[in-house]
Image (cartoon, rainbow, N blue to C red; front, top):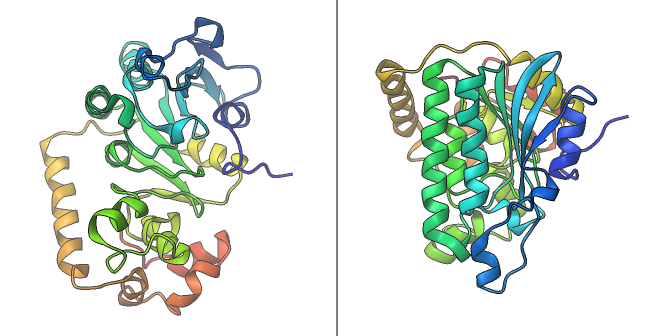
Length: 294
């Protein structure tokens, strides 16, 4: 029986992802590690500030984990929230686990504590780069209700691997933000089909921004994450320049196209209009050898 990643809470995702009984939470609920800014502004706080961090085992290998709770403020990052994620990655540099699992679901930075949140995201990015330089896998799992946007969208692209489902979304600015700033003619956030084929998991996988594509099932995320727990090559200047070159080439190739379906067609994926309707296995078969890879 499958369990939906999309519908699960952060703690349910951890419970289904790692080996049974192996999770040890850092700063558990009784620690009451909450944001000092929210109460000062009269906003409700959460006992864990919307993120769970700890240590566990995945397929017998030790991993450190950070899981954002989308049900609390859409997984938005604040000072304490971000410090917990950064702290678990900095701890990984000392403990040298098999990998760090980042179960992300975030709309971006909290407006309530914007400056502190922005600093927190920058620290998360630096910690991710430190992990990459140390050769420790940092694996993002993306399949939640709120997707991964804003600063955490940038952080996701700094990870060593991204596992995404069709329900997952990944981007810098969310659809509503684009519509508000650029107008509905530029992007209609109410057009859900447009939203999912632009920032949804299938398109991100086709563009090479996600390493793996899985069904909306915690077990599927578990199996793929376990397979990615291999040492990664330390990232240096050469790797960064190669990534920049990959992005520049992609912009040159697709910059004049207006819709994801046009991109899929240009890659020889036919019929492009059928892609949103395909189940996981059929989708992977349809794009095999045609998706972009870095």
